Length: 505
Image (cartoon, rainbow, N blue to C red; front, side):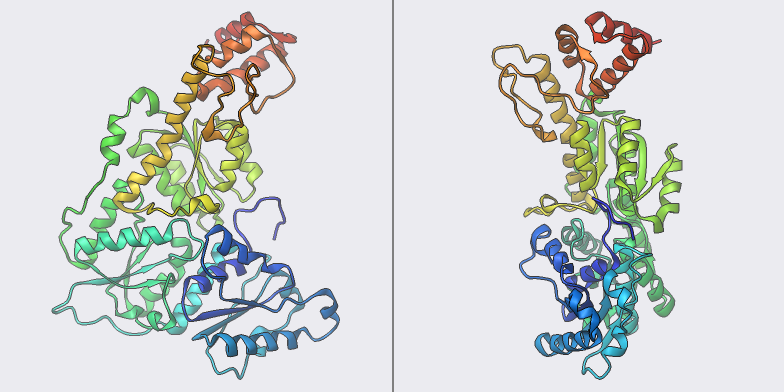
């Protein structure tokens, strides 16, 4: 486990909490020190849930380490069962609780409720793996049944993978359920989101499984395929092209014709209608979990005409998939869970748009680059009150708006900068979409990512502001490098012109 200022994934017990919080009839007893209850805030403040997670902490303190911490756990488990009456009890330890080496499974023997002991190695694994392992253990324990006779009924499937604290998972489920309904496919069980242990017992009745989020459901879906012979739909329907492929894959498994299910799909027309000089060929850098990063690359290149300059993920379990996708676009994949590596890569590739996580949003504010969030980890603003899926044809519309509007806003800011000296424009106007605060009239907005204290003379600084915002940072850096190499301390308008001529050769 690595301690850092920012982290893309929490420890694996947070993943287990995501599964427990998503389901009904499940309670999680966590052997953890006082202070680990911070995880509750992820659900109540970030996701804005109307109830706290179904988790009981033992909350041992330093003075308890000299006593019987095992008894603390037994008491907490017993009281949780008496108070919440769950259908199944999950038990495990946080990273600190793991060091004590109490045995949660042995300490819960005799309780009148099914118990699943989670072995989540906090120092080797992380959040998504913890969620995947927890869901897998629940499916193994409860999944049963056999596919129902096909005569006289429509084909049905399970939707696997949506969890609590998932990026737009609730809206994705609603969109895909609607899409499947138009195809003539019924949904048997959605799990883990809103599912109970009794629902898991019906998983085997479906004809096939739809894996919406492989990081969460791949392991469980593989076991269901081996146990019940259920095939799985592997295409993740993010973007118009992928949704069409998804429809074709579902239709083949269900034995149906791929009817025209494309309703209200505006992205193809919108992307063709935008002036190519504004968006086509714009450089984009993508980073996130593997599922969303790979899907975003396809949409960005094939459907919006962007030029991919970087693709990466923090999901090391899916590094091979991301490397293959990156190679197909002629770029080298970045596999890292260190946000400083990502920041360095963004600075090096100089993209005009970044599609990433909450971390990349912070990075881009400092670098002055438009950014749209496509993946967890996310903040409260990425759980909108409105319907805003990422999947399906409506999700493609959402992607267009979310990704293209930051670039269009950038064009507006460029025009404001060009005509800033006109009477109807104020010098205090600042790029609202980049989080830059306004400044008093007469003071220039400070440029970000200045390499050093090289002095720009007023005439050169005014000319720099007329350069489009997309390349202004590169022009500034190139000019400063040019000036330093020639021993020029103050950059004049002529220095700017000389640098432009030099790099244009």
